[in-house]
Length: 117
Image (cartoon, rainbow, N blue to C red; front, side, top):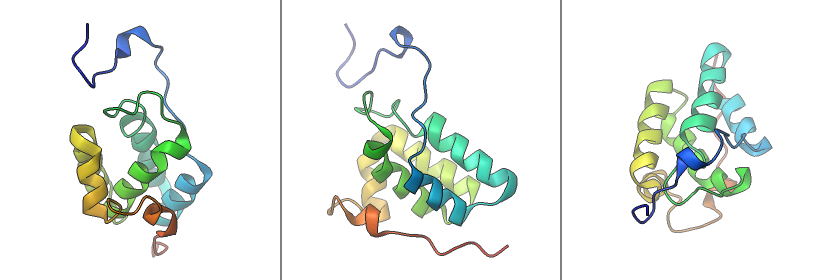
């Protein structure tokens, strides 16, 4: 028997939930070049259905957490990694830090300022 809140990742195939179209839009606005691909990959592999209590989440379900990580990243991979690490411990803390904790629709209204190349 597994401890409460842990997923049996060994029992299910290795699959990553792809980014939604809106998550991709925000990645496009924040990251360019190799950083763009790395950011998308980090979100898909590290900030998805392997988060606590997100084992059966869809791309749309994950948008709130993924947008929060993107918001805190400010377009920097190191900050994105930090935000994802916070989500892996308790994604509710990430939502609060990004200002998405009290309004379940706040993440939908957030759109980053496009990067300056």
